[in-house]
Image: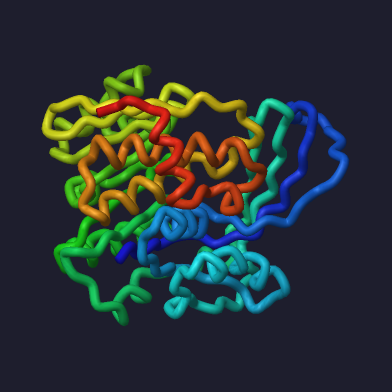
Length: 303
């Protein structure tokens, strides 16, 4: 089982020709309300990639909760441990330009009430995976990682949005996944000075004896495990919306690790899922089904 511990949002998405500069107002033709939140996005991605998934999170008792949970429910994610908060359901305001790049502003809401105590009603063992990000209270995330490690489970952590990770927590993470910017920010906070994301994850992997992975957008991904470099390539696609691509990678990668696949295959599986997500508008709605990912891999020679 994969236990996803993280945020649940409703995304307000506006398509624009170009992203606004500071102080600038940009006109969009319309907006969409789309289920989001990095935790929920990754839970959906895991489920669509074929994994058994339980979501740990919180929503408000408001009109936004139902649409925020709709895709999770339709993807057969177990929501039995969700908390209902007195705060409003979390929201993200997203502007997406014609190239597919985006700007995102988050309103935390109920996500601020997510806590590791929600894990204590679940039977957790060494066959389980905890999947975490950094959109809920970091202290609760660190406690969640410590708790599941005490049960012998695997920890996969996505350092997004990028913030400092305590050294004692890093040592308990089995897989640390970052993009190019996050790699440098996380390394710098730990006094590893470099402007090269590959060097950053190499040093992090070596110093803390963990598997570090950097996603590189259209260039694929690279991992360092036991001082060994492992690479994977992205699919050749025309991006429509990059929102959620990293979450699609995370979910697909975690799903393959839970199936006992090699890190090489899991890395390529994740890259394919992330690429496919860029061809569809939205976050959760863009995560591909397992069959689609497998069919895309038939066009790649990677082993």
